[in-house]
Image (cartoon, rainbow, N blue to C red; front, top):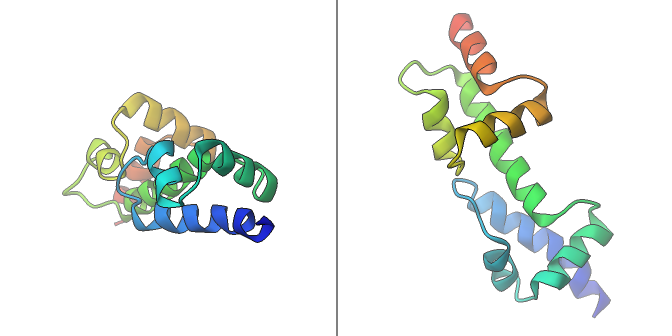
Length: 115
């Protein structure tokens, strides 16, 4: 029913939050929420105004930023990117800058100086 559609984004978001360390496919998200890919997109569009995959990426970008802000000298920007499910560093840096207005390397360098 209608209430089921309304709960879809929340269910999908909870799954994404629990599995933030990897890139989740839309197929996996649909199967986890027992719905079709089309229904999932429709529910997100209606109740959230963004796509499920955009949400999934946002969660991983925020998680990466938290790690970068720790400025841990034992890690690197690329290790953090991979830990958060980003396989392509160029895409990660571009998406990160689009969201936060600066590059991951800038955040990390600043955090390291502040340690």
